[in-house]
Image 1 (tube, rainbow, N blue to C red):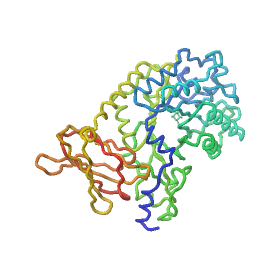
Image 2 (image 1 turned 90 degrees about the vertical axis):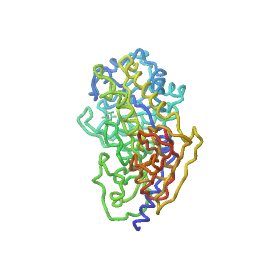
Image 3 (image 1 turned 90 degrees about the horizontal axis):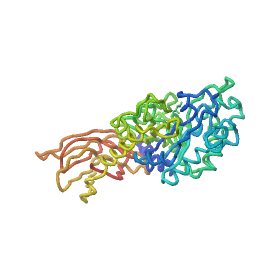
Image 4 (image 1 turned 45 degrees about the vertical axis):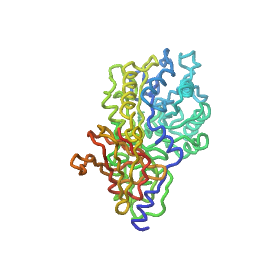
Length: 449
Ligand code: FUL
């Protein structure tokens, strides 16, 4: 394969329907970390906690869903089981679950309560089922994979439609001091069979990968098209390598995983977008002495995830009572209001202006917008038609100055599903110059706020 052919192939690696749904349509979803840790003030439970301590007497999942929705969030992923092994549903396969909690006299099922509340509230439901299990007596033996698959099957068949399954990669010691060899291929097969529309998150794919940090930042150049050596569980879409390379040294936290000078060494390319995960507070579980992060930090994370070609999973940990802390409820609403207010009036649409397209050299091109009157612009939002691949490598934004010439106001790298460019100027005319693209640019939407 020649170099140009390789670049064109990279530009045409496409998402699956399920990836488009979670990454592009849902985009922003909540995480809920809830387990005996909520009662012991730990982040990683030991696995020997008594189910008797888990009793969220004031739990109301409709309230969770209302708060989540107030932030503009469209789905939720709950820790059905965290590393301590306690199951938030009525599992047939273990006693270390709701059956032995005082909550609703052992008849409670929090996965069900949440799934039903999501359905009533019109948001999507997903779950985290930790492979690492510090309670199961099977952990460290082949039987554990059967146990895990049985639990997956329960969650995938009894709780309606699931949009996202979150596989943590952590693999520590179980109660008998042994580590487990996880049968990820077997787990994936079950999910594909029982819920073919659900995306699967894991460091290595297949559908969505970890952005590489827990501080809430996508890369400056975030590519959804990455080498198969990084996401080896995703489907390889290109055939033949350009250079006989080996990228097995790559990590999720590397800065340059999608750039062309790197991917030319890959054995094949896959579509596997990045997910930014972050908690509204420092811990994943509730700790009474912690405070929620500032509105600025959360909004900034939204811009640097949803607005940087990644999805965003924001964790809100319930308190021992089962309720969200009122400070978190307030912050979620503030965040939702800020997102809504920042992106409510698109000057292009509200003025009925059309975008003018100009072909330049090769795959370079420009988009021009002339508004009927001057506006103060705070965000330029660009969206490629990601369903047909990710192409733009770099771009520049210019505004028309009073003197009539173009002044450069922003330069960026990738666009992908959505690129939110924070800017600050007044003008009635802007130009977006695509300075490098892997193939013809397929811009889905340009918005000015
Ligand atoms: C990590 C886990 O070890 C943390 O406890 C948390 O669940 C986070 C989202 O993933 O790997």
